[in-house]
Structure formats: C-alpha cells, structure tokens
Image (cartoon, rainbow, N blue to C red; front, top):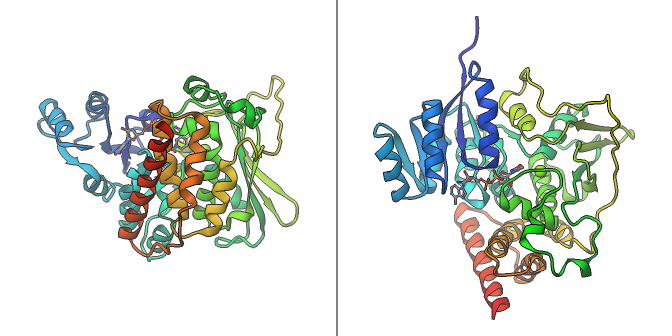
Length: 391
Ligand code: NAD
Ligand code: MG
C-alpha cells in the first residue's frame, strides 16, 4: 500500500532555492504535495505557481500584493506579512524555508514550535536566533531541522559516521568547503575597485543576488561557520574552512581517529533540497551525479583571511555569542543591499559590518523582543555608517 503524500509549505517560492524546489516537487508528485507558498516581489510568478500546483494557501508581503493575488485567484486563502508566514509554517508536514534574510525568522520558529520538519535554506534566521532556536528545539515534540545549505547537508550526512547524536565527542572538526568566490587569489589591494557585475559573477553556483555577494566577500562562509555551529551544537573553533574551487566536495567531518568523511556531487542545489524533503528516503533521481569517466581534479587550499576579513569577523561574533551573530548578519544584510543599490563599494561591505560590531555590547538574547531590538539597532547603525560613507 502506498503512503499518503506528505505536505510541503514552500516559503520564498519565487526565489532561486524556491524555483529549484519546484523542480524537485514536479518529479515527486506521488510522494509530496505542495500546499502553501509565499513570495515577496514577484506576484505574477507566485500566481503561476499557485495555478500549476493547485495551491490555495498563499503568503504575500503587503495588502497590494494580496489584492493582486485575489483578483486572479478569488478562492485563495491569502495571508500577509510576518504573521502570515508564521501561520503558513505551522501546518504542513515539511516547511522549506527559502525566504531571504532575517525576514525568514517567523518561518523557522513557527515550524519548529509546531513540530514540523524544517528544511532550512534560510541560514540568517538560525544564525541570528540561535539561542532562541535552541530553546524551541529542546522542547519535546519540537520539529527537526534538516539543512538545505549544501555544506550543512554534506556535514549532516557525514555525521552518520559518529557514534553519538549530540556533542559529537568523536568529531575532531567540521570542514566547511568554500569555492572561494569570484575573487579567489586576489589580494586585498586588488579588490578596491571591483564592480557589482564582477561580484555577481560566481564561478560555480547560480544563486540569488544577496548570497552571491556574500560568497564574493566570504561572508557567506563566515555565516556558514556560525550556521554549522548552531545546527550541530559544535563550538565555532571546531569548524574550519577549506577553499575547494570545484565545489564537488560539499563539506567534510574529521573524526578523532583521523578518518575524514565527505559528501560529493556536482554543484546542484536540487540534491540537498531533495535530501531535506525526503530524508530518510532518497528519491530515485540523481541530481548532480559525478561523471568519473572523464578526468576530474579536486584541489584544496586555505582561505586568505587578509583579503577576506569577513571570515575572522564571523568567528569573533561566534565566540562572543549572544546577539553578536545577529548583529553581524543584520549589518551585513544592510551593507549588501547598499552595495547592490550601488551606494557603497564592494570593500565597504565588510568594513561597515566590522565597524558596526565595534559598538556591540554583550546581550544575552533572552527573548524574541530582545532579538528584534538587536536586529533593529544593528541595522540602524549600519545605515548610519553607509550614510557617512556616501557624504
Ligand atoms: P532569492 O533572493 O532568490 O529568493 C528569496 C525569496 O524570499 C523570494 O521568494 C523572495 O520573494 C522572498 N523574500 C525576499 N524578501 C522577503 C521578505 N522581506 N519577506 C518575505 N519574503 C521575502 O534568494 P535565494 O538565493 O533563493 O536564497 C534564499 C535563502 O536560501 C537565503 O537565506 C540563502 O542564504 C539560502 N541559500 C541559498 C542558496 C542558493 O543556491 N540560492 C544556497 C544555500 C542557501
Ligand atoms: Mg552554502
């Protein structure tokens, strides 16, 4: 007897991860049913997805978008804003959080609180809210997190080599791999004049604009160190970064006996997306399988921490804990937006984040209100710095 399909809420359905998730869902109609979607700007695309998958529960950002959806789909159940996102994340079997940035927080918290599987692409919510997420995860009946980020999916799978389920005392370190981005090999002084076009030209991955810029500064890798630490409960100093330009080894786990386990595949986000949706079942469609019949060279090198200071900033924020990672991520979101709007130079992005963090004073992050307050303060400080740079 075949099982009932599991229901999926795909929040951030119109983005890069959202679109690739739809590709997976098109192949898995027998096992997975899309039953809720949300989107930010591209309302027409959202309507098209709702039509294709017969989805009636739809989240939008504002009243104008709600009206646009209802004009086309009068029977839709439309919810608006952050509260709407939280509601959509409460009732499907699996919630794929592909929203961009801190705006994904209500999805992360609601899915876990309601005992749903959280297939997590949105790293910013976990990084900023790690202490709150920990608390929610420790309640009995809370949902589980299965990471979608390719590095964390690789670590998640490689940790099957551990004899433990928490703390991982037999793990020496996690090794997060990095492509190095478009500026690998360049020195700090060669990076003062790079353009938006240069920064958006990622060598191995096609992704949304924000994460592509984060990859060019290596802030994405810094955020991923914090993400790994929060996801697996391993201190940041047991997480290392290795540059691997081919993006085939998606990350590794080194055990105390010298064994290193890794997950390999060609760069294709549909693989970790499918894994996070199906686990423990592996869907019978190979995204990104490797062709070993032709020559394939894999290389590894240490990151250049001088040219890419974002990495050490992220480690420092992780060691400090509390709201420091929330400040780092919030200031970075604001600085990347300003860079994409061509208000600041590429090298100003990380300089703004570093400058904002000098104002950080320890904050234990005991509540959601405290987190929102910290997020708002870090954003305001980043905007101040950006205004100063422009005048
Ligand atoms: P994207 O910009 O392509 O898409 C983001 C989605 O979120 C869109 O549907 C957009 O409409 C929606 N959105 C944006 N701002 C919103 C807001 N304020 N409120 C509600 N919805 C909003 O981004 P992406 O590249 O798909 O990345 C999504 C998340 O996945 C990010 O956290 C990113 O770090 C993570 N991620 C992406 C990739 C990738 O390959 N693209 C890989 C790993 C992790
Ligand atoms: Mg990644």
